[in-house]
Image (cartoon, rainbow over all chains, first blue to last red):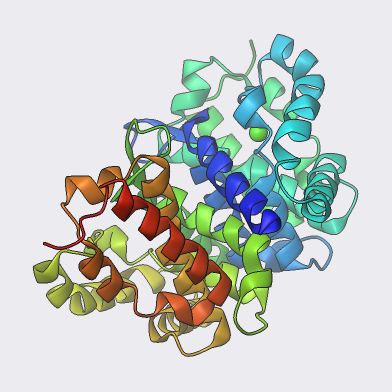
Length: 196
Length: 196
Ligand SMILES: [Ca+2]
């Protein structure tokens, strides 16, 4: 069965997402999170927080997007939100990665995967706006739970954070209001700098 | 907002799933897999392998089950399939864990989570049969990709494997046939013992 063989090859290939390390620390503070764990966490958030999506969402579509949104980082690596140089070359690196990784699947599923990823990146549908909101707030929750460790490590100020969160509010007013309170608390206790 | 506060507390609590270590090795052979990574992998498999479910399945329901099926291990720990003593106390330990962890959520969502977990454990619906099949074949794929490392570490024989896989075939004939071939290959090359 050529089709099943390709699917299984893909399933094994994506195991590599467990090696892609992010900047966020786990709540136990003992190590940094990887992309597979991050993607699982977002999917679980989609299950239990979808009531806060700004527009009604197809939860399955949100979950599919968050499950696959970082697969391109298997080749392209995780580009930290505040790494300006890395973000300049990110799109080209990720497109090349998508072409290699997604095309391991049979044609119809590779096509579905390209469409899912593009939808996530374009942030135009209610589902992709909400998925992007989850992607942005999850590291904030982990940073908050670790006394702002990643913010302090990278000496981040609130203006930088806000400039990278211009889309976060688009997926959910409620979650955005919650996260703004988290930012405020962390500015007050010095985990996030007021200015550079 | 009391409801959102409970949901966020739950989202933070489940971060601990990333610390629950399984017996399976990652395909790179460098460390063992944790439950969050495993759950992500199963969810992705549900997206791309559901065409092989024995009966038609609601993919969202399958995904929800695999995302949450190991949460009880945050308190109860991972019980290795071939640990007979551990498996004797597993049900009681996991029930207690479910009561603490699931009840962090608001009442309606705690109830939904208990039902999802019970459905997964009962293996009666097409969705839960398929979810359990995915849960059993994923470590087989990783063991196969690491030259049978976990099988060799635990000196496992094929009779033990087959006795623990009595339900695996219930969710998918196609995937079960595929996995039987994987077992056969690994018996032939000595990664799985023919008898104790
Ligand atoms: Ca990313």
